[in-house]
Length: 556
Image (cartoon, rainbow, N blue to C red; front, side):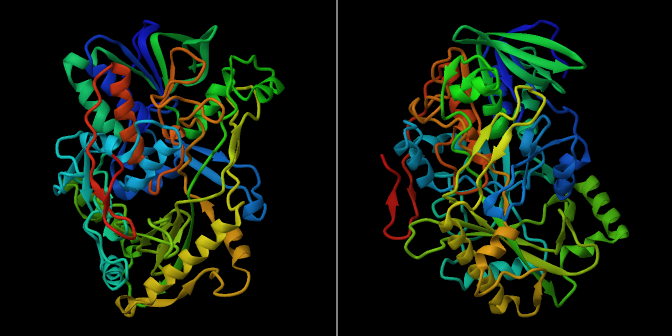
C-alpha cells in the first residue's frame, strides 16, 4: 500500500481513522478522481488488531496508538489524564472496544438546533443504515442490511453477564432489544463491530474492498507512517499538505480538496499549525494568520467514566481465561474458528439510563466488566467484576491549543474534566444506580464485598470522584459545525474562510453524542462523502424514537 510516486491528486485525505477510511473509499469509488490517504501510523495489522479479545493490547501498544497527556486538571484534584486514540490505518476503530452505539435520536435533532442544518435524525438515519449490515437482521426502519460494516449482536459469555441482564429485567428501565433502534434506554446485549470473530475496523470494512477491486484500487493511494506537519496554503486556499516521512519533507498537492480526518485532537492542531484558528493565539506562536476562527480547538467535549468493582463469591469471571493453558486454547480456537472467548472483548452487556426522572433521555452509560481489571487487562487470579459508569452528557468543556509551533510536539490539551458541579452530581446518581443493579437478587450468588477504594455513600463524594474519574477517550467538538463566530465549519464540513479545505471527524460535532463515537463518525463521513461527490442526498426517513413520556417521531 505504498504511495504513488506522483505528488498531485484530486483529493488528499489526512488521517486514516474511521472518517478517513470512509471518505477515501467513497471518493475512490467515483470514477473521476484520484485520492491520496495519509496516515501517521502503520498500515500492517496483526493479531492484536484482528482478535477482539486482544483489544486491550492494541490500545496499549504505542505502535498503534497516540497517547496525549492533558494538562493538570483542577477537577481531578490536580491529576493529569491521558487520552488514547488510534494511530494506524483504521484509527481508533482498530484499537477500540468494538462497541457500536449511534447515540440518541435527539442528539442529531439538537445538532440542527445548534446550527448544523440538515443533520437532524431523519436526515442521518439513511446513512447509519447505508453503512451497516446488522447480524442478526434488525428492524429495517432503523437497521441496515447491505452495508460494508458488519455489526453483530453480542452473545454474553458467562453468568455475570447473564446476571446483569436479569437485573435489568427487574429494573424500571427494563430490557431494550436494540439501543440503536426505537428505544435507547434500558439494558441490552451490545452491538459490536465484529465480523465472524474478527474486528470489523473501518479499514477492513471500507478500504480493503476498494483496494481489492481492479476498478477502484488504481484511484486510491495510501501513504502510511507519514506525519502531516502542515497544510500547503496558497492565499486563502488549501492547496496540499507537507508530510514528514523517513527523514524527509514531502509535499503533496490537491487539485480539488484537502480533507482533514485526523480526529478532535489532531485536526484542530493541524489547522492551527497552518494559520487557521484564534488569531491572537497563533501570533503568540509566530504563526501567520490565514483565517481567524476563534472556535478552532474550543468546545472540547468528552465523556467521563469511573468503575466500581466487587469480589466474586464464585470463580466465574473472565480471569479464569488468564491461565496460560486456557489462554493458549482460547487463542487456538479463535485462529481456527473465530469463535470462543477470543472473538469478543468481554464488554457484551450494558445499559443506558437516566440520572434523573426529570430527564427525557439517558445521560448515563453502564457496562459490565466480567473481571477485576488491573490496568487494562483482567486480574490473573482474583475473581470479581465491575460496573463501568460513564457520564455521557457532561457540562464541562475544554480546549486544544498549541504548546509549540513545532508540529512534532503534541498540543496542549485541557478538557476541564468535572469543572462543572452538576457533572459530579450526575456521577453520584450513576454510582447509586450501579450499586442498585448489583444489589439485585440476580447477583446474590456472585456478589462479594466491594473491591478497591469505594465511593462514599455519604460524605465527600466529590473528593472521591476527583480521585477516580478519567476521560473516556471520546474527544469531540473542536472544529464544530456552526456560524464563524462560534463554529469552524459549514454543515458540509468546509472550513469557513478557507477554500479547498474540509474537516470530517468527531471534531465537527456541535455537541457530543450520547454514546461511543465510532458509529456516528462513520455516518458523518458517509454523508459528507456524498456532498463532496455532488451526489443527491437521500430523502429524510422520519422514524419514531423513545423519550421518557409520550411516543413521538423525529422532527420533520
